[in-house]
Image: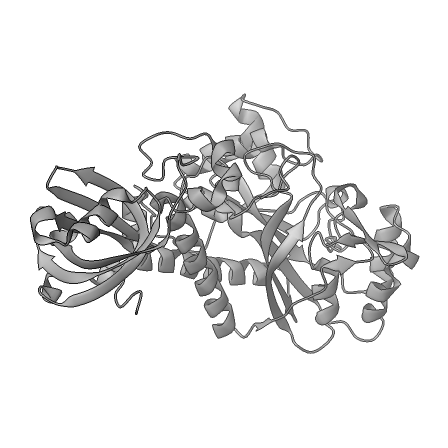
Length: 439
Protein backbone atom coordinates (compact mmCIF):
# COMPACT_ATOMS: atom_id res chain seq x y z
CA UNK A 1 0.00 0.00 0.00
CA UNK A 2 1.25 3.48 -0.87
CA UNK A 3 1.08 5.48 2.36
CA UNK A 4 1.15 8.93 0.74
CA UNK A 5 0.48 10.23 -2.76
CA UNK A 6 -0.21 13.85 -1.79
CA UNK A 7 0.80 16.31 0.91
CA UNK A 8 -2.15 18.03 2.55
CA UNK A 9 -1.13 21.37 1.02
CA UNK A 10 -1.62 19.86 -2.44
CA UNK A 11 -5.30 19.04 -1.86
CA UNK A 12 -7.38 21.64 -3.67
CA UNK A 13 -10.77 21.86 -5.36
CA UNK A 14 -9.04 20.89 -8.62
CA UNK A 15 -8.74 17.35 -7.21
CA UNK A 16 -12.46 17.03 -6.50
CA UNK A 17 -13.46 13.38 -6.99
CA UNK A 18 -9.86 12.16 -7.25
CA UNK A 19 -8.45 9.30 -5.19
CA UNK A 20 -5.54 10.21 -2.89
CA UNK A 21 -3.52 8.78 -0.05
CA UNK A 22 -2.43 11.07 2.78
CA UNK A 23 -0.44 10.24 5.89
CA UNK A 24 0.35 11.99 9.14
CA UNK A 25 -0.84 12.48 12.70
CA UNK A 26 -4.35 12.71 14.15
CA UNK A 27 -4.42 16.39 15.06
CA UNK A 28 -7.91 16.43 16.57
CA UNK A 29 -11.31 14.69 16.39
CA UNK A 30 -14.96 15.70 16.63
CA UNK A 31 -17.90 13.41 17.31
CA UNK A 32 -21.33 14.35 16.01
CA UNK A 33 -22.89 10.95 16.57
CA UNK A 34 -23.33 9.57 13.07
CA UNK A 35 -20.51 11.74 11.71
CA UNK A 36 -16.87 11.78 12.80
CA UNK A 37 -14.49 14.53 11.79
CA UNK A 38 -10.79 13.79 11.91
CA UNK A 39 -8.15 16.44 11.24
CA UNK A 40 -5.00 14.86 9.84
CA UNK A 41 -1.75 16.83 10.00
CA UNK A 42 1.46 16.52 8.04
CA UNK A 43 4.38 18.95 7.77
CA UNK A 44 2.58 21.04 5.14
CA UNK A 45 -0.78 21.55 6.84
CA UNK A 46 -4.04 19.96 7.99
CA UNK A 47 -6.84 18.24 6.06
CA UNK A 48 -10.31 17.21 7.25
CA UNK A 49 -11.34 13.57 6.96
CA UNK A 50 -15.13 13.16 7.19
CA UNK A 51 -16.55 9.76 8.16
CA UNK A 52 -20.34 9.32 7.79
CA UNK A 53 -21.46 6.21 9.66
CA UNK A 54 -24.22 5.14 7.30
CA UNK A 55 -21.89 5.37 4.29
CA UNK A 56 -18.93 3.43 5.75
CA UNK A 57 -18.26 -0.15 6.73
CA UNK A 58 -18.86 -0.53 10.49
CA UNK A 59 -15.27 -1.69 11.04
CA UNK A 60 -13.83 1.40 9.32
CA UNK A 61 -16.09 3.76 11.24
CA UNK A 62 -15.12 2.02 14.51
CA UNK A 63 -11.42 2.35 13.66
CA UNK A 64 -11.80 6.10 13.10
CA UNK A 65 -13.80 6.48 16.30
CA UNK A 66 -11.13 4.67 18.34
CA UNK A 67 -8.15 6.72 17.18
CA UNK A 68 -6.24 8.58 19.87
CA UNK A 69 -4.86 12.05 19.19
CA UNK A 70 -1.38 12.05 17.65
CA UNK A 71 -1.69 8.49 16.38
CA UNK A 72 0.09 7.99 13.06
CA UNK A 73 -2.27 7.00 10.24
CA UNK A 74 -2.54 6.69 6.48
CA UNK A 75 -5.87 7.53 4.87
CA UNK A 76 -6.95 6.67 1.36
CA UNK A 77 -10.11 8.15 -0.09
CA UNK A 78 -11.69 10.69 -2.40
CA UNK A 79 -11.22 14.44 -2.34
CA UNK A 80 -14.52 16.30 -2.07
CA UNK A 81 -15.31 19.99 -2.24
CA UNK A 82 -16.69 21.36 1.02
CA UNK A 83 -16.72 25.10 1.63
CA UNK A 84 -17.10 24.53 5.37
CA UNK A 85 -13.97 22.39 5.59
CA UNK A 86 -10.49 23.90 6.05
CA UNK A 87 -9.15 25.00 2.64
CA UNK A 88 -12.48 24.12 1.00
CA UNK A 89 -11.91 20.37 0.61
CA UNK A 90 -12.16 17.20 2.67
CA UNK A 91 -11.41 13.51 2.23
CA UNK A 92 -14.12 10.86 2.28
CA UNK A 93 -12.18 7.82 3.58
CA UNK A 94 -12.16 4.38 2.02
CA UNK A 95 -9.45 2.90 4.23
CA UNK A 96 -7.68 4.08 7.37
CA UNK A 97 -4.48 2.30 8.33
CA UNK A 98 -3.22 2.81 11.87
CA UNK A 99 0.56 2.87 11.51
CA UNK A 100 1.27 3.55 15.17
CA UNK A 101 -1.20 4.45 17.94
CA UNK A 102 -0.22 7.23 20.38
CA UNK A 103 -0.29 6.75 24.14
CA UNK A 104 -2.59 8.89 26.24
CA UNK A 105 -2.52 11.32 27.88
CA UNK A 106 -0.19 13.44 25.78
CA UNK A 107 2.55 15.39 27.63
CA UNK A 108 1.32 18.64 26.07
CA UNK A 109 -1.41 19.92 23.79
CA UNK A 110 -0.19 19.88 20.19
CA UNK A 111 -3.03 22.14 19.05
CA UNK A 112 -1.64 24.92 21.26
CA UNK A 113 -4.98 25.59 22.93
CA UNK A 114 -3.53 24.65 26.32
CA UNK A 115 -0.42 26.57 27.40
CA UNK A 116 2.73 24.60 28.20
CA UNK A 117 5.81 26.01 29.95
CA UNK A 118 9.06 26.06 27.98
CA UNK A 119 10.68 23.41 30.19
CA UNK A 120 7.75 21.06 29.62
CA UNK A 121 8.00 21.66 25.90
CA UNK A 122 11.74 21.04 25.79
CA UNK A 123 11.43 17.92 27.96
CA UNK A 124 9.00 16.58 25.34
CA UNK A 125 10.60 18.23 22.34
CA UNK A 126 9.55 15.72 19.66
CA UNK A 127 5.90 16.22 20.53
CA UNK A 128 6.43 19.98 20.87
CA UNK A 129 7.91 20.10 17.36
CA UNK A 130 4.59 18.87 15.98
CA UNK A 131 3.07 22.25 16.82
CA UNK A 132 2.92 24.26 13.63
CA UNK A 133 4.20 27.52 15.12
CA UNK A 134 7.24 25.65 16.42
CA UNK A 135 7.88 23.91 13.11
CA UNK A 136 7.68 27.21 11.22
CA UNK A 137 10.69 28.51 13.17
CA UNK A 138 12.85 25.80 11.64
CA UNK A 139 11.42 26.14 8.15
CA UNK A 140 12.37 29.84 8.26
CA UNK A 141 15.77 29.08 9.81
CA UNK A 142 16.46 26.61 6.98
CA UNK A 143 15.49 29.19 4.34
CA UNK A 144 17.77 31.80 5.94
CA UNK A 145 20.76 29.44 6.09
CA UNK A 146 20.24 28.12 2.58
CA UNK A 147 20.07 31.58 1.02
CA UNK A 148 23.03 32.83 3.05
CA UNK A 149 25.02 29.90 1.67
CA UNK A 150 23.83 30.54 -1.91
CA UNK A 151 24.73 34.22 -1.77
CA UNK A 152 28.18 33.43 -0.40
CA UNK A 153 28.65 30.98 -3.26
CA UNK A 154 27.79 33.77 -5.71
CA UNK A 155 30.40 35.95 -4.00
CA UNK A 156 33.12 33.35 -4.55
CA UNK A 157 33.25 31.70 -1.13
CA UNK A 158 34.30 28.07 -0.71
CA UNK A 159 32.56 26.14 2.07
CA UNK A 160 34.98 24.36 4.41
CA UNK A 161 34.80 22.28 7.58
CA UNK A 162 37.46 22.82 10.21
CA UNK A 163 38.22 20.61 13.26
CA UNK A 164 35.81 20.72 16.17
CA UNK A 165 38.26 19.00 18.54
CA UNK A 166 41.05 21.49 19.13
CA UNK A 167 44.22 21.88 21.17
CA UNK A 168 43.80 25.58 22.04
CA UNK A 169 41.01 28.10 22.33
CA UNK A 170 40.56 31.20 20.22
CA UNK A 171 38.39 33.15 22.66
CA UNK A 172 40.11 32.53 26.01
CA UNK A 173 40.22 29.50 28.26
CA UNK A 174 37.37 30.41 30.61
CA UNK A 175 34.67 29.31 28.17
CA UNK A 176 36.28 26.13 26.84
CA UNK A 177 34.70 22.70 27.21
CA UNK A 178 37.57 20.27 27.98
CA UNK A 179 37.30 16.71 26.69
CA UNK A 180 39.44 13.59 27.10
CA UNK A 181 41.30 13.04 23.84
CA UNK A 182 43.07 9.71 24.19
CA UNK A 183 45.93 10.39 26.65
CA UNK A 184 45.69 14.20 26.69
CA UNK A 185 43.25 17.04 27.13
CA UNK A 186 41.55 18.74 24.21
CA UNK A 187 38.62 21.11 23.82
CA UNK A 188 35.43 21.58 21.86
CA UNK A 189 35.93 24.45 19.40
CA UNK A 190 34.63 27.85 20.51
CA UNK A 191 34.91 28.95 16.89
CA UNK A 192 36.93 28.04 13.78
CA UNK A 193 38.85 31.31 14.20
CA UNK A 194 42.42 30.00 14.18
CA UNK A 195 41.82 27.55 11.35
CA UNK A 196 39.94 29.94 9.08
CA UNK A 197 42.80 32.44 9.45
CA UNK A 198 45.32 29.73 8.63
CA UNK A 199 43.33 28.95 5.47
CA UNK A 200 43.85 32.52 4.28
CA UNK A 201 47.42 31.46 3.58
CA UNK A 202 46.25 28.57 1.39
CA UNK A 203 45.06 30.53 -1.64
CA UNK A 204 41.37 29.75 -1.12
CA UNK A 205 40.94 33.50 -0.40
CA UNK A 206 37.27 33.38 0.66
CA UNK A 207 35.91 30.67 2.92
CA UNK A 208 32.58 29.98 4.59
CA UNK A 209 31.79 27.56 7.40
CA UNK A 210 28.37 26.83 8.90
CA UNK A 211 28.89 24.54 11.86
CA UNK A 212 28.34 24.06 15.60
CA UNK A 213 30.44 25.88 18.19
CA UNK A 214 30.56 25.62 21.97
CA UNK A 215 30.92 28.17 24.78
CA UNK A 216 31.04 27.14 28.44
CA UNK A 217 29.53 30.43 29.56
CA UNK A 218 27.82 30.21 32.94
CA UNK A 219 24.89 32.23 31.68
CA UNK A 220 21.23 31.40 32.15
CA UNK A 221 19.80 34.09 29.92
CA UNK A 222 17.28 34.14 27.11
CA UNK A 223 20.06 34.88 24.58
CA UNK A 224 22.87 32.46 25.49
CA UNK A 225 23.45 28.81 24.54
CA UNK A 226 26.23 26.35 25.28
CA UNK A 227 26.00 24.93 21.75
CA UNK A 228 25.01 26.99 18.74
CA UNK A 229 25.38 27.21 14.97
CA UNK A 230 27.94 29.76 13.85
CA UNK A 231 28.28 31.18 10.35
CA UNK A 232 31.95 32.01 9.85
CA UNK A 233 33.42 33.91 6.92
CA UNK A 234 37.01 34.89 6.17
CA UNK A 235 38.36 36.96 3.27
CA UNK A 236 41.93 37.51 2.05
CA UNK A 237 43.42 40.51 0.29
CA UNK A 238 41.27 43.11 2.00
CA UNK A 239 42.15 46.77 2.46
CA UNK A 240 40.38 47.14 5.80
CA UNK A 241 37.56 45.82 7.94
CA UNK A 242 35.19 47.84 5.73
CA UNK A 243 35.57 45.16 3.05
CA UNK A 244 34.30 42.56 5.51
CA UNK A 245 31.41 44.73 6.72
CA UNK A 246 30.40 45.46 3.14
CA UNK A 247 30.34 41.77 2.30
CA UNK A 248 28.34 40.91 5.41
CA UNK A 249 25.66 43.51 4.85
CA UNK A 250 25.21 42.43 1.21
CA UNK A 251 24.87 38.74 2.07
CA UNK A 252 22.72 39.20 5.17
CA UNK A 253 20.37 41.72 3.55
CA UNK A 254 19.93 39.35 0.60
CA UNK A 255 19.18 36.37 2.86
CA UNK A 256 16.69 38.34 4.97
CA UNK A 257 14.90 39.58 1.86
CA UNK A 258 14.67 35.99 0.62
CA UNK A 259 13.03 34.96 3.90
CA UNK A 260 10.66 37.92 3.74
CA UNK A 261 9.37 36.86 0.31
CA UNK A 262 9.75 33.07 0.17
CA UNK A 263 8.47 32.48 3.73
CA UNK A 264 5.70 35.07 3.60
CA UNK A 265 3.02 32.47 4.40
CA UNK A 266 4.86 31.16 7.48
CA UNK A 267 5.61 34.70 8.66
CA UNK A 268 1.97 35.69 8.24
CA UNK A 269 0.77 32.60 10.13
CA UNK A 270 3.15 33.52 12.97
CA UNK A 271 1.94 37.12 12.99
CA UNK A 272 5.40 38.41 12.05
CA UNK A 273 6.03 41.28 9.65
CA UNK A 274 9.60 41.34 8.40
CA UNK A 275 10.44 44.77 6.95
CA UNK A 276 12.65 45.29 3.94
CA UNK A 277 16.33 45.67 4.78
CA UNK A 278 18.31 48.45 3.12
CA UNK A 279 22.09 48.80 2.91
CA UNK A 280 24.53 50.13 3.85
CA UNK A 281 23.97 49.66 7.58
CA UNK A 282 24.95 52.69 9.70
CA UNK A 283 28.39 52.74 11.32
CA UNK A 284 28.64 53.92 14.93
CA UNK A 285 32.06 54.09 16.55
CA UNK A 286 32.49 52.65 20.02
CA UNK A 287 33.16 56.15 21.37
CA UNK A 288 29.97 57.48 19.79
CA UNK A 289 28.04 54.54 21.21
CA UNK A 290 29.37 55.25 24.72
CA UNK A 291 28.33 58.91 24.42
CA UNK A 292 24.82 57.98 23.25
CA UNK A 293 24.37 55.40 26.01
CA UNK A 294 25.64 57.68 28.77
CA UNK A 295 23.48 60.56 27.54
CA UNK A 296 20.38 58.38 27.89
CA UNK A 297 20.73 58.26 31.73
CA UNK A 298 19.44 54.65 31.66
CA UNK A 299 22.85 53.10 32.26
CA UNK A 300 26.49 54.17 32.17
CA UNK A 301 29.52 52.83 30.33
CA UNK A 302 33.11 53.71 31.11
CA UNK A 303 35.25 54.10 27.99
CA UNK A 304 37.37 50.99 27.59
CA UNK A 305 34.93 48.43 28.97
CA UNK A 306 32.86 46.09 26.87
CA UNK A 307 29.22 46.97 26.31
CA UNK A 308 26.90 45.14 28.69
CA UNK A 309 23.61 43.57 27.63
CA UNK A 310 21.79 46.52 29.19
CA UNK A 311 23.99 49.03 27.35
CA UNK A 312 23.35 47.23 24.05
CA UNK A 313 19.59 47.39 24.65
CA UNK A 314 19.77 51.14 25.38
CA UNK A 315 21.75 51.76 22.20
CA UNK A 316 19.26 49.58 20.31
CA UNK A 317 16.38 51.81 21.43
CA UNK A 318 18.30 54.94 20.40
CA UNK A 319 19.10 53.54 16.96
CA UNK A 320 15.53 52.28 16.47
CA UNK A 321 14.30 55.84 17.09
CA UNK A 322 16.61 56.89 14.27
CA UNK A 323 15.05 54.20 12.04
CA UNK A 324 17.90 51.68 12.22
CA UNK A 325 17.49 48.08 13.41
CA UNK A 326 20.81 46.86 11.97
CA UNK A 327 23.98 48.86 12.61
CA UNK A 328 27.72 48.32 13.06
CA UNK A 329 29.75 49.35 16.11
CA UNK A 330 33.35 50.00 15.07
CA UNK A 331 36.72 51.10 16.48
CA UNK A 332 36.59 49.14 19.72
CA UNK A 333 39.27 49.64 22.39
CA UNK A 334 42.20 47.37 21.53
CA UNK A 335 42.50 45.97 25.04
CA UNK A 336 39.06 44.33 25.07
CA UNK A 337 39.40 42.47 21.76
CA UNK A 338 41.24 39.18 21.08
CA UNK A 339 44.90 38.98 20.07
CA UNK A 340 44.13 38.26 16.41
CA UNK A 341 42.33 41.57 15.83
CA UNK A 342 44.54 44.17 14.14
CA UNK A 343 45.33 47.28 16.17
CA UNK A 344 44.97 50.58 14.32
CA UNK A 345 48.61 51.57 13.73
CA UNK A 346 47.75 55.29 13.71
CA UNK A 347 45.56 55.10 16.83
CA UNK A 348 46.75 52.07 18.83
CA UNK A 349 44.14 52.60 21.55
CA UNK A 350 41.50 51.32 19.10
CA UNK A 351 41.43 48.32 16.80
CA UNK A 352 39.89 47.23 13.53
CA UNK A 353 37.09 45.23 15.11
CA UNK A 354 33.36 45.59 14.58
CA UNK A 355 30.14 44.15 15.92
CA UNK A 356 26.88 44.00 14.02
CA UNK A 357 23.91 44.74 16.26
CA UNK A 358 20.33 43.81 15.43
CA UNK A 359 17.64 45.48 17.54
CA UNK A 360 20.01 45.95 20.47
CA UNK A 361 21.53 42.47 20.36
CA UNK A 362 24.97 41.55 19.05
CA UNK A 363 24.69 39.01 16.25
CA UNK A 364 28.17 39.30 14.70
CA UNK A 365 31.73 39.97 15.81
CA UNK A 366 34.43 40.50 13.24
CA UNK A 367 37.24 42.65 12.00
CA UNK A 368 40.54 42.83 10.18
CA UNK A 369 43.01 40.26 11.49
CA UNK A 370 46.66 40.77 12.30
CA UNK A 371 48.57 39.02 9.47
CA UNK A 372 52.12 40.15 10.38
CA UNK A 373 53.89 37.33 12.20
CA UNK A 374 56.02 39.46 14.54
CA UNK A 375 53.18 41.83 15.44
CA UNK A 376 50.88 38.89 16.11
CA UNK A 377 53.37 37.32 18.51
CA UNK A 378 53.78 40.58 20.42
CA UNK A 379 50.01 40.96 20.64
CA UNK A 380 49.68 37.46 22.09
CA UNK A 381 52.37 38.13 24.66
CA UNK A 382 50.64 41.36 25.69
CA UNK A 383 47.55 39.32 26.50
CA UNK A 384 49.54 36.82 28.56
CA UNK A 385 49.31 33.93 26.11
CA UNK A 386 52.02 31.27 25.80
CA UNK A 387 52.92 31.37 22.10
CA UNK A 388 54.25 27.81 22.26
CA UNK A 389 50.63 26.65 22.63
CA UNK A 390 49.87 28.22 19.26
CA UNK A 391 52.84 27.05 17.16
CA UNK A 392 50.55 25.22 14.71
CA UNK A 393 48.70 28.50 14.14
CA UNK A 394 51.67 30.87 14.07
CA UNK A 395 53.63 28.75 11.58
CA UNK A 396 51.01 29.58 8.93
CA UNK A 397 51.95 33.26 9.27
CA UNK A 398 55.66 32.67 8.60
CA UNK A 399 55.31 31.70 4.96
CA UNK A 400 53.30 34.44 3.29
CA UNK A 401 50.00 35.44 4.89
CA UNK A 402 47.92 38.06 3.03
CA UNK A 403 45.92 40.81 4.75
CA UNK A 404 42.59 39.29 5.74
CA UNK A 405 39.52 39.65 7.90
CA UNK A 406 36.34 37.89 8.77
CA UNK A 407 33.44 37.40 11.12
CA UNK A 408 31.32 34.98 13.07
CA UNK A 409 27.53 35.28 13.04
CA UNK A 410 25.13 33.51 15.43
CA UNK A 411 22.22 32.29 13.32
CA UNK A 412 20.00 31.52 16.35
CA UNK A 413 20.13 35.13 17.50
CA UNK A 414 19.10 36.31 14.05
CA UNK A 415 16.14 33.91 14.03
CA UNK A 416 15.22 34.94 17.58
CA UNK A 417 15.10 38.60 16.57
CA UNK A 418 13.28 38.37 13.24
CA UNK A 419 10.60 36.06 14.66
CA UNK A 420 10.37 37.96 17.96
CA UNK A 421 10.96 34.76 19.93
CA UNK A 422 11.37 35.43 23.62
CA UNK A 423 13.90 32.68 24.41
CA UNK A 424 16.73 31.64 22.09
CA UNK A 425 16.20 28.00 23.09
CA UNK A 426 13.08 28.02 20.94
CA UNK A 427 15.26 28.43 17.84
CA UNK A 428 17.20 25.20 18.50
CA UNK A 429 15.83 21.70 17.97
CA UNK A 430 17.44 20.26 21.10
CA UNK A 431 19.05 23.14 23.02
CA UNK A 432 22.06 22.78 25.30
CA UNK A 433 22.65 25.06 28.27
CA UNK A 434 23.99 24.79 31.83
CA UNK A 435 21.07 22.62 32.98
CA UNK A 436 19.96 20.79 29.83
CA UNK A 437 21.86 17.84 28.35
CA UNK A 438 18.85 15.72 27.29
CA UNK A 439 16.86 15.10 25.18
